Image: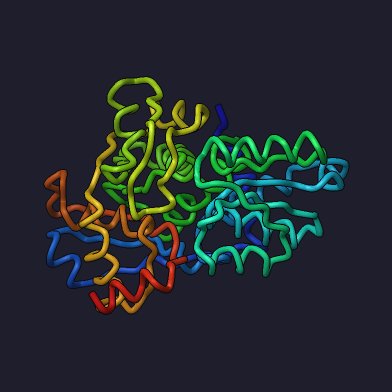
Amino acid sequence: MIAFTDIERAYKTLKPVVHKTPLLSSRTFNHLTGNEVYFKAENFQRIGAFKFRGAYNKIASLTEEERKRGIIAHSSGNHAQGVALAAKLFGVKATIVMPSDSVKSKVEATRGYGAQVVFCSNSTDDRERTTDELIRKHGYVLIHPYNDEKLIAGQGTVALEIFQDMKDFDYLFIPIGGGGLISGCALAAKNLFPSVKVVGVETEGANDCYQSFRASKIIKLQSVNTIADGMRTLSVGTLNFEIIQKYVDDVLTIKDDDIFPMMKFFLERMKIIVEPTGAVAPAAMMKNILGIQGKKVCAIISGGNIDPDLLKKILLP
């Protein structure tokens, strides 16, 4: 298992290249929930999401020989862009395996950072199979989207920044996809302030970690169905789940129907664009599933890369 010192080292690596994203607040949101709530706005991060952190930290850890071989990743969006930009900054060749139905803007952004995009069918198995074939053929180094220690340490720097800015949070709400963000942030948070309650959030249609957390073992879903595309993983990673079991206090789920109102709130009240996955943790706080009152809470907005057609649906329902 990674240690807190790994996250501190990752922060030293990342500090010159990442944006230190702000903590935002809304009086209206506080009034509606009865709490003092802050949002860690990773939608203002490079590539528009937290994923750049882990990707850069991982590539920074590679040897010169590994970088010369080139790197590969599989992703439908934010990890693809994070790896592509990080690879560009290191001058490393990057190949990204993406589903053929990926959002056009995300494919274009990935190519815009200089990566080669290889398409596959829209299934996790085919993504991994295509990636493995390319690794065997070309010798590329895999940059896994979540189940990797260097990547987890990079994502954990989000929490490090949160507690640099404000030290007395009672709760930290974090979205869960494959588990990279929550595992890194939970480890950092509990080492800095053991009393903080770390709460993970998924959608009901992608509730693998919710089930796994309660079963105390990894549960793999047969399929997922959610508009939160960053949560379309069948199971959390093994490294991630080990950390989640040790440091996370609870895992909740929300409905997809809770996401659009939260995104619309951010647009209308706070003038920021938040993608569906990025709205999940704030939406759980808005619903106040735990019945929290009078507490200081931070919810992580994981990204803001939204399909333009989806944005139209929110603005013009």
